[in-house]
Every structure is written in structure tokens, then in C-alpha cells.
Length: 351
Image (cartoon, rainbow, N blue to C red; front, side, top):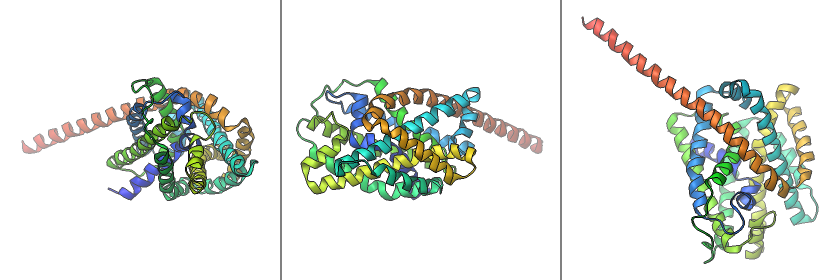
């Protein structure tokens, strides 16, 4: 088993989830409320994340689709074009959100937006190299992001970390939250075609464990500080702890935003390249549209558009899950038939 490869794929999934909304805490507040969040929210999300990652890695290894639209034709049948459209809308929403988040950081640091253009151009350059470049970037920078995020949240946790109704947790909110994250990860995870079954399990387990732990410490920090409002709660926590940690958190947020930006832009560039025939020009067109949509602002995107993605994600994941179950059953039937045939041949030879 290639453990290093499994870790890289897990970081690809983690990098998709840990964008501006997750790392800032704003996304968790949007889905789970602002009156104290139960830590059971993370426990409920963990198996859902594991199952979703496992599903899309399995489909990628099973069908080896050229892109997400090819997978849609296999899994969604006559509804494939509708799902293509929904996935494009989703990817543009996430792209706009990440670019808007860079502008929020710019205003926090310099008083005016600028970083969206700089990091948008850098993402477009990396995306032209395909999924291989994105996997390398995620594996390189995400461990540092995770360490800084844990440091800020741990430094903010106090005796009020359980100041909430422990059992007040909505399964519907958990399902929508996980599906919102996984619908974007689908395009990246199904692009991985070389994993063995045991490697898909290990990659999914690592990804879900990392996301579950991070989600727990963010919830504890939010409950402790009651910072349920504002665009970037964890950045405000870092500022109150120490100036150096605030700078480190700015870097960590920038990195986490960038990894999700890469995934969204890669998905959109794959589709646009079928029209422009050149990946470089496709990435440029995607960036221009994303910058225009980012003018909506980060808080509006997270509060109003992310829940819409969650609803679409539930339907999309269900369609892919049905396909995976059918494939598994067909595989078992073929295996069973092969064994029976081999047994009959053996009996004829013996007689």
C-alpha cells in the first residue's frame, strides 16, 4: 500500500473542504447556528465525509472518467446535462466565494481589495498543469495550515467551550453541510484513477479524521469566544491572542482559500477547455467570470448561496451512490458466475 500516495489524496480532499468558509469558522456558523454549536456536529459529519470521499474515489478508479461531465453521463443518465449545469453553478459560487475571501483579507491587511487578482492569476497558471499540480500544492502547504489553525483555536478555547445545548444538533444541517463540501470535491477525487480499494479506504479515513478534528476545535473555539458574527471569526481570535499569530493566521487562511480556489478553478477549466480547446485560455475566461461574481462579497456567498449548494449536493451524491451500488452488485454477480463456471470445468476434467 502506498501510504504517501494515500496521504496526498487525503490532503486533496481536505484542501477542498478547508477553504475560507471552513478555516474562518463562518461556514460552520452558517450551517449550525450562532447560539452555541454542539460538538456532536463534528461527530455526525465525520462518517458522512468518509463515505462521500470513499464514494467518489471508488467511482474515479472504477470508471476513470476524463472529467466530471463524463462521470455524470455514466451516473445520471438523461439528467446528466442538468447535473453538469448544477456543478458549474456550484463551482462558480465557490470560486467567487474564495476570490471574495481574498478581498476580505486584503481589506483587513491593507484597507483595499487586491489579493483576489494576484492569487487568481497564480491559480490559473497552476490549473493549466492539471490535477497533478494541484495534488502537489495541497500536500505541500496544507500541513502548515492545519498546524496554525489548531494553534489559534487551541489558544482561544476556555471553560466555556461546552457553552451550548449538547444534544441540539440537526442531522439535516450535517447532511447539507457535508454534501455542500463534497459536491466540489467530487471533481477532484474522481480525477484520481490509480488507487487500489484499500488505498481508497485509507485516503478517505485520513481525510475524514483530519476534517473531523479540525471541525471540533473550531467549534470549541467559537463557543469559547462567542465570535459567531463577522466574516472571519478565527482571524479575529488570532488578533486577540498575539500579533505574530495573527500574521500566521492570515497566511494560513490565504493558503486554505487558495487550495479550494484551485479545485473550483480546475473543475471549471476542465469544462471550459472543451469549448476553447486550449486550457490556458479556458482558465483565463474562468478567472474573469469569477472575479466579476466575487463582487457579491464573501458573507453573502457563504450565508445565502452555500446552503443552496448543499441541497443540490444531496441529490447529486445520491445519484452517484446508486451507480456505485449497482456496479458493486454487477461485480459480485460476475465473480459468482466465474466461480461456478470454473467449478463446472473442473468436474468435467475429473470425469
